View (spheres, rainbow, N blue to C red):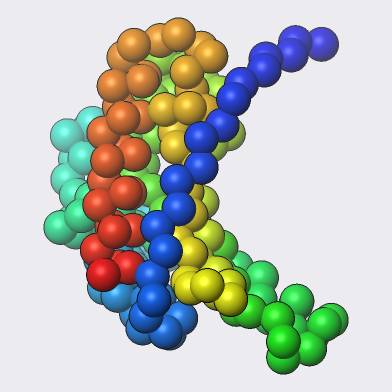
Length: 164
């Protein structure tokens, strides 16, 4: 067995806006491609540059797309009632970014796409994210860390804009 320890770093931006408004603002900042078509376009790409073009078209202005959304709050409310806050776990990423990291650190595939948690708490709506740089730092690969830092900056920019 191989074991690798790491220390995480969680960033959280807190908004005083209503939950639905924060989620709407977040949704407006990331791309939501039709996934079946996206997969077909990737499969039909004949070169690395064509793959990059397909991803660029799918990810939009902020270079990130939604892969999946889990409504964690639904289950919590069903179990514990309406006093519980709403909570969404949203997986976002960019396949080109992911491949750039996994080329240098294959384990980066365990962390990509990244998770954004948007949850309603008594003191506001939290937009939380575990940084990719922290997750990959123990591997010591500067090439992967450079890509991770760029990804972290993009995600933080989106979280701050959604929270405003």
